Length: 91
View 1 (cartoon, helix red, strand yellow):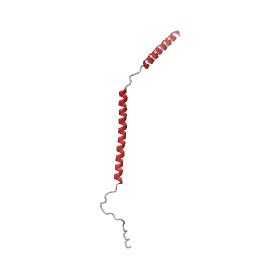
View 2: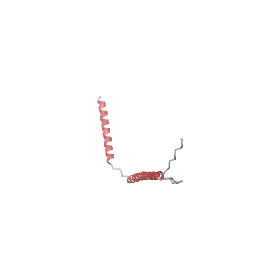
View 3: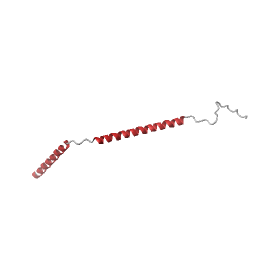
View 4: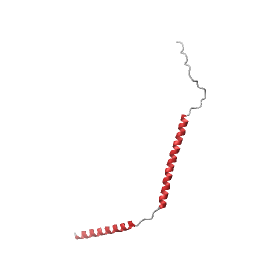
């Protein structure tokens, strides 16, 4: 049984040492990558612009379609203002 306790203590010390090393490495600041942020910003703005322009194009085409559908067709023959009903035939 005492042998197991020594193994557990050694394991705890190893884990503690690894945690200290990780904490020391974690304190080191990494260099900032400004170019990555700039590229991400440009790409995000490009996506927003493409979505906006696509939506604008869609709305423009819908307005044109509605204008075409709502326009009166050009008359080919004169249309009478009123219609005279035909007299009923004799029985």
